[in-house]
Amino acid sequence: MSNTTSDDSLITTEVQADSNDDRAPVNEAGTAVAARDLNVYYGDEQAINDVTMEIPEKRVTALIGPSGCGKSTFLRTINRMNDMIDICRVEGDVEFGGKNVYDADVDPVALRRKIGMVFQKPNPFPKSIRDNVAYGLKIQGFDGDVDARVEESLKGAALWDEVKDQLHSSGLELSGGQQQRLCIARAIAPDPEVILMDEPTSALDPVAASKIEDLIDDLAEEYTVIIVTHNMQQAARISDRTAVFLTGGELVEYDDTAKIFEDPEQQRVEDYITGKFG
Image (cartoon, rainbow, N blue to C red):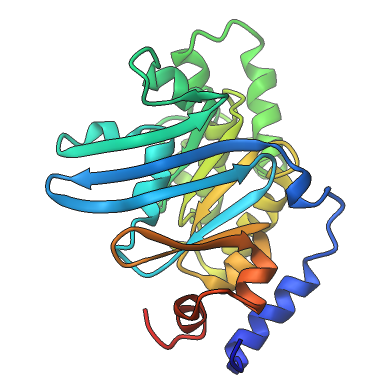
């Protein structure tokens, strides 16, 4: 398409640099989550407009677009977090494990054990580090070795070595980046299949954000990761596929990340990526 700006060239370079991945090509991955003719409304306002997409398993999928375009709404639709909003109405299907998660016989609490979520701001409970990670296990009646699972989860969140000698200290005493990794450990403790992340680094300093990005790459070896981010360079660095939402909850383009950033099909997508609007 048309010539790119210097910022766009930077993004392109980073996509190419990260393209040497040991994992099989995205098109060989199975489907973890699929949206079919999905529409979401808050009262009379439409937040998601007829979205259909398939999200590959054990890959990182980034959702990008300007504020208010429906990215977070789409994310929260996947594990039915929008059920907590009285005026929210969902039409269409969100398929996970071959079943529409909005079917009447689906238990949202059980669903969230399989589809965990990490929020924009770290939100550890006012409990010890150990009890933060063990919280979800207790809720689901886990009868295995809790301490072993806590250790495994903290290692999975790249936090164990930093906190193994202070497990009974409050999670609130950790730094912001450590708190976010604690929340990731809490999310993976119940052994989910999918991890949703809503701008997980936006409240962190660059060093802490870099650690989370490295962690996301590691997590994709075992989990499907779907991340909302306003940082397009971050999306270019860490994701395998990128979905571009624009005003009105419209999914304008969805493809391999390199294709989105190097040669998008839609002029609107190129305009957004190169900063011409949004």
